[in-house]
Amino acid sequence: MKNGQQKQPPIGQVIEDTEAYFAGMGYADSTLKRYRYIWRRFTEYARRKCIEELTVSLCRDFMRDEYGFEMYSIGLSPSKSLVRRPLLALLEFQEHRFVSRRCSMKDPLGNSFPTEFAGIAESFMEDLERSPLADITVKYIRYHLLSFFRHMIQKGIRDLDSIDINAINQYAIYLKGYSKSYIYSFLSAVRKLLKYALSIGAITTDITNCFPVITMPSRLDMPTVYSEEEISAILATVDRGSPIGKRNYAMLLLGIHYGLRSSDVCELKLSGLSFEDSKISLTQQKTGKETTFDILPDVGWALIDYLRDGRPKIKNDYVFISHRAPFSRFAENNHLWQIINKHLRMAGIERDKRYRGNGFHSLRHSLAGNMLTHNIPLTTIKEVLGHENLYTTTVYTKVDIPQLSLCALEVPQ
Image (cartoon, rainbow, N blue to C red):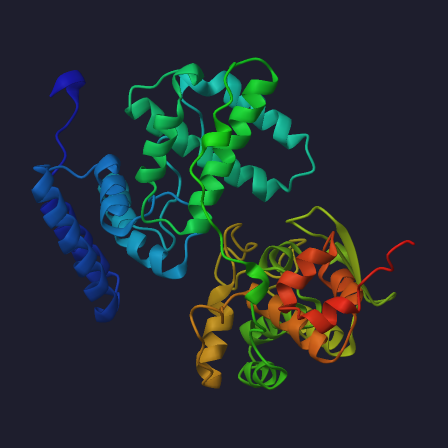
């Protein structure tokens, strides 16, 4: 081999060794059955491509061609994460001869833009970081642009001036298989970059007006997710006698009573709790807005119960932590859906996959909808949810015309 590189074993051998490793670790037969199914499809895909060795590039192509998403995408749905896990396991076992509980999600291509586009892209990202956009939004834009520029390089396009509307249309076709909202966010990131490049004179032609039109359905038909009775049933399934149950109960109450996003629950600090003043203070991760809530009695007692008798005794400023060693904070991309999904199943509550989600955002929608049912003004709901404008609040409440009329302003004569 060139440069003394050792030839990798064939894909079949890597799969056989990885499966033996999982069996030795005591993985359930149901889990191995699911892994074998993905591995079998992957083997067939590699055979059609006439490729014998396991590579990141081959895994990427398989995910995109067979399942319609990028392997290193962030914020994937639980079902897509389950599809990705078997391939991440193969790559990790091939390199390290073991597989961690949470397979490495580090993109081997790194977080750097291709050299040809690095200057303008990094300048644009620095400009975004100075803007009011939330950190998570900037992170997603960076991810979208990394994917876009790598695709341009593969197509032989190596400078901004060569990016024409045909290249954009081909990229839109390449994204086929993603949801409309995801394609919209990809193209929106590229549009922002090109607008910036035009504003500083890096390009002279504006092609953004010719971008493919992605029609998005109205979000005003979003219904209330779970009723107050269903919320009570969910809480009733929590084992409040166990340490994890104490933690989950307190977390659920924060979503139910305050509509906190999962990111805000994970980021809540001990320094943000003031039991003397009965206040919870935090900075919303999405908006950067500082928010303070009164500690409601049941929330206060749930927090005290967890902090006193449930939380591992470690030095860590985060309120909620994983109860598995090394007892650290929740991962940044953990949306806590597994907690709500567990108690939905225990409560026997079925959900319509189109509308009734199983994450903390479902509790946020439910809070808004149930408040509206009790004729609480939209302006109050807006403040509770921490929205900047009233329109965003109407999205959460499936507001109708009579409710909107309550917010009408008098027309000047």
